[in-house]
View: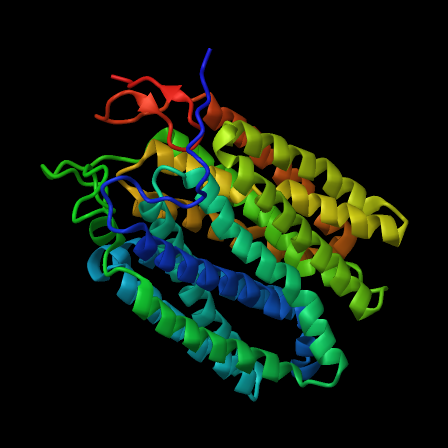
Length: 432
């Protein structure tokens, strides 16, 4: 019977033989703040959707086009992220992306027309995706022995920011603050994040944090071994990419359209539902940040997203608004640990190609965000928004099935020796 081992009490501890832990923790903390700001930025348009529609005279289809365009920008950024990390290093890539994000949000706050607002959103999407890939890769490299906990803590920062964003923005608008000022203020904060990233993030986390060497010096981000041979992606990674794409398609659609789904309720109440949803995500990730290294990641992720599928059907069909709000919060709890658990599991299967793992999974997530959520705007005019949103439950169930399939696939640990899986602690034999 497999034995589960505990990595110890510290949540974020770099591997032995690395540079002083304080340096890695500083970079991790700033990276976590930056990741939280990506979460805040992701909620700006959903929380301001009514004001933006009114200001620029856009319909649901117009907002659907915006979500599609920005999702495609996110896709471009995810493809660029791995290459930029390899050629420029962590510090330059992340700080440049943060600067671009700040500029884009400031332009959106000053945009005189929809034709300016939309392209600036695309730039923000590209910058956000590069930051997403870069920060996930940074954590995989900084904390290789506690990936399950570290990644749940990282994604917890996103959840916390997304949790407080809707209500905070609703309160600011409620006291008379013009909505463009929210965009402008967010852009200014990103400029500060840029400075902090320059000051704390190592030039190349793989080399500088790990004492001038990589923990698993096999294939680099391009998939080439030192002898020049090129290795394809493991089938299990592809299946996990499908799962994460379905999951993100469902989660993003719920987040993007919830305020519109609850249009019969006052803005403050609809924003409360969105806050409960992201509050649930925060709770889910906080719990798994504590127990993440004690569970089998793919099985746990499959169970949680399957539960979310059932809860989504209930939340979208129950006729009692108060109960619907609570159910959306429960959906968030179930959704919470899914993304970081998948990333952690994939990272443990490809420990020497962390940038590749982050790039593939982020790109797949973007494809999910670029497919279904924008389609909801068009489907709502044909079959109704409530009915279109039931697709989120179907996608969540598909993600659960894909994760169960990936779980049954053998772990290809390459040329490394047998040893405990750094995510779950389960002892995994080497596969010849």
